Length: 129
Image 1 (spheres, rainbow, N blue to C red):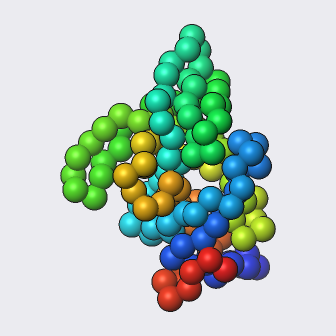
Image 2 (cartoon, rainbow, N blue to C red; image 1 turned 30 degrees about the vertical axis):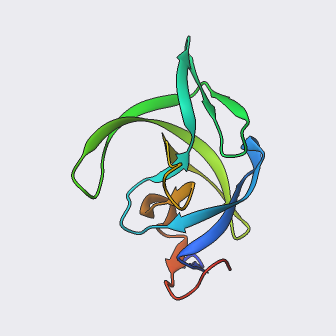
């Protein structure tokens, strides 16, 4: 029996209940492998990292890893990766997010295909379901 897939638009509002981030505008990007959470000033403090979220709150992550990420332009950079609970159209999913400064981007959140796979079908003609 196949799981029911939710139709999702090219842009959606998502929430991160554990981070107290509600209704953040996200870009749905099937070209991106991993999802990305826009943060600023990532600092390692002992065995944890601290960063500034889009809502200007500081959050500490104790469970993280580092990963080399390759952009669509072919540039590579090392980023922190954390597992976070995200709510997309009423579906709560715990998935990996890279942490990156997205302040110059239109969307502070990017949802990639690893999170979408098996759960969503993207209809690019739709926005903000």
